[in-house]
Image (cartoon, rainbow, N blue to C red; front, side, top):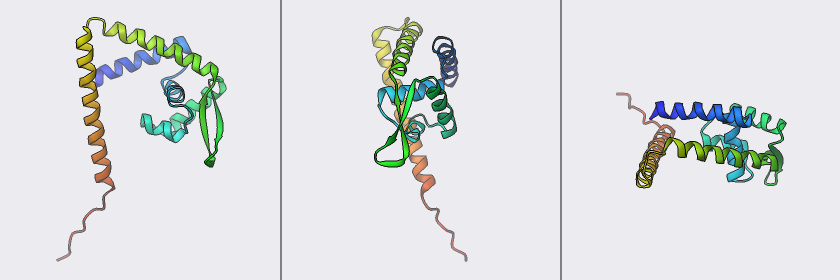
Length: 150
């Protein structure tokens, strides 16, 4: 699974760079702002479980390319919201169409039922990964018991 994920991510990175002149990190920021609407950098970091520096660099490049803009958050003076521009939405739509064509190509040998079963299996795996992660985070945050000194 890990090898396949790496291959797909490398191919995605090549496609994004050659066709749209954006990186995977920039794509992630753009996809969040286009699918979820106005988002903070912290929200984007949480969704993709990535570090703030990577998101910050992606945001800077997207701002320079005029694919996103920032506006103040009404509920928090120091927080900025990130929003896709019309040009950003055009790029987003183009990437989605390209990714749809790519996934149709790599899954072309599967029947509709096999695709459905594959997607269900992946969803089940994702749920288990999230459950394990949640359990690990709760356990890591729990206070450790002290040993009594006898």
